[in-house]
Each structure stands twice: as C-alpha cells, then as structure tokens.
Length: 248
Image (cartoon, rainbow, N blue to C red; front, side, top):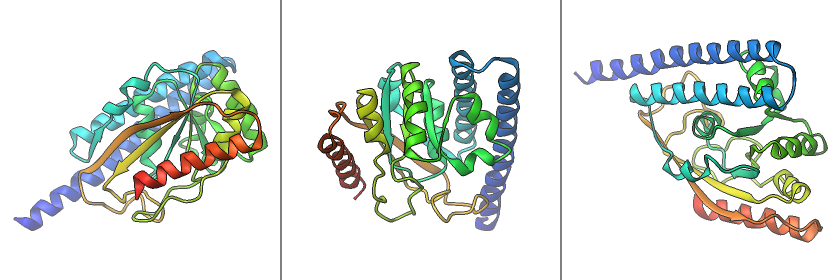
C-alpha cells in the first residue's frame, strides 16, 4: 500500500508539471498576441500585468487543488491596492514570482537578463513591463517609469535564489538606489517555505516532499531615504539585517 501511495503522489506531481507547462504556454501565447496587437506603452503593460496575474492565479489554484501547494497569502491582502511602492523579498525558490504575481495585480518584477532569452517567458515579461536587470545604471530608468505608472516594483536583492538551509546572500544595492531616485518607500516581504523545490541547485523534474507550503508575510515599510550616500547605505543595511534576523 505504501508503494502504491508513493506512486500516486509521484504521478500527481508529474501530471501537475505537465498542466503547469500548458498554463505557461497559454500565458505566453496570450502575451505574444497582446504585444503584437497593442502599441508599446503603459496601457499595454497594464493589460499584460492583468493577464499575467490571472494566469498565475489559475496556476496556483490548480496546484492547491491538486494538493501540490499550500499557500497562505493573507499577509498580502493589504498590499493589493497599494501603488507606487518598492517591494523587497528574500528569494528561496523560482516559485516566488509566480505566487506573488497571483496575488498582486499591479506587480512588476526585476528579472535576471538570462530569463528574457527563454522562449516560454520572453513575451510575457516584455508585455507585462517587467524589467531586465543588465546593470544598475540601465535598471534605474525603467524602474522609475514603472513606479510612476502606479505599479509595485519587486526586487530580490540577493540577486539569485538562496540554497535551501543556508543564510541569505549579501544584498545588492539596487533597491536602495531606486528608492533614492524615486523618493518612494520600501516594503519588505518575508517568504517562508518548508520546501527545497526550485531553490538553487534543485532540478525542475526532481520531486520534493508534498505538499509544498508557502507563507508570505509583510515586514516593516522603510521610508524613502534622502539622496545622500549614508542614507542609502543605512536603508540597505536595515533591510538586510531585518531579513537575516527573520530567516535565522
């Protein structure tokens, strides 16, 4: 009986991967059509974000119904209608962006440049107005523009996913520089999970213990720093200290 139970769980997991692959294909196809049907601009980006939020919600709800994922996102309810804010979160898994996009309809994420070359995500990132992180100098301009449009800008300042069971990596200063440039506050988010799935070094096809449990909490909201070097450094250190204390 135990063997059959394990086989059933594995079958459910790999079927779910196939279903999520289909959802992502639909997402990217819709994004491709939007990108070619509408002119470049804030309106197209807003529609792209709504489409991404809808399909991400479909994906998360399917995974919850299949008992693959358990998400507690109550902590994000207060942020749904908040505009013009910089969000900073730890990054334990590739699922982080999907889960956050499913709950926050005005979200724009800063993403690694390498992700933009993937055929199944490129159209979606471009249509939703996500920002390619090539360098800090090339990041600040588009980030400021998205914030002026009323979006929430999400950054993972560790720069990469953390490895399960390890401390967070040192924070990169990009979010502090953007906060100084735009004079906007920084809202911290804490992503808690008991699953190592899609953390650094974990294969997409390797089955983790199920269900995977995620809880996202809001932390302190730090006011915009002054435009001097000491204020920017203090913001960086305060956010890094808060995340490390709560992930210890």
